[in-house]
Image 1: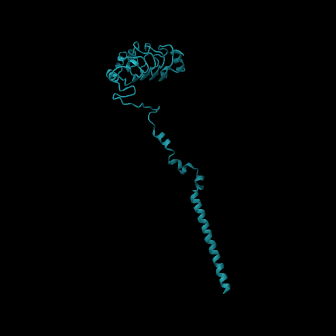
Image 2: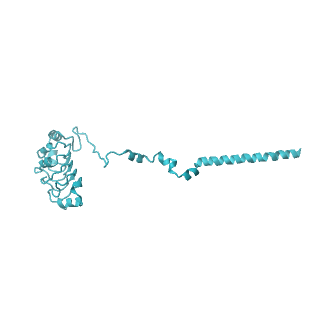
Image 3: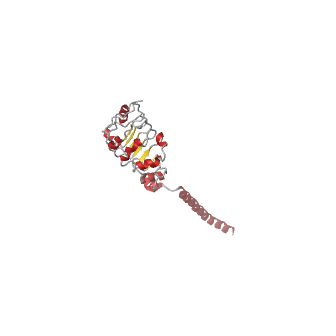
Length: 233
């Protein structure tokens, strides 16, 4: 597996670091933070899953970061969450599932004023802690969601929005099918509208013409009948 420095170089793809808002550095093998730096001033989401991390030492200043995923690492007593308080004060969501954390390791997270969601699943020591959820909510006053559930234990559905937020009315209209304008005669050329006759009406008109023709034939036959009768007399 590549080092985190190598992963960072590949993921950056020669972009200006200041333009990057999302970065995935998962599955690096050196067990330490590298590559990422203070130039990532607009980074809002950072993922460092399965990187063998035992500490966050070396974490750069990321003033716009709101979501950090550092699940499936080896973070425990040497995690050093204090560095997040200093370098990522805007954090709102942290995923710490699959580490080796205890309650004492995380006390500094209460200093993150906007931290509202935390995932601590699959941390063995926490799972054995009596009233674990109540203690975490008490320790971090800003917290609203823990392990996918609110303070009452009710599951919270994760919301997903596209780049433009909620669906626009135009998109809804497209899903409902074409509007009346699709059927408007303005969609046809002038010649087409002049020649166009609905099939049902056309058939009806032709039937009327034939009926009228039949009436004319009967009228033409009537004088011949009268003439024959006069000759017989």
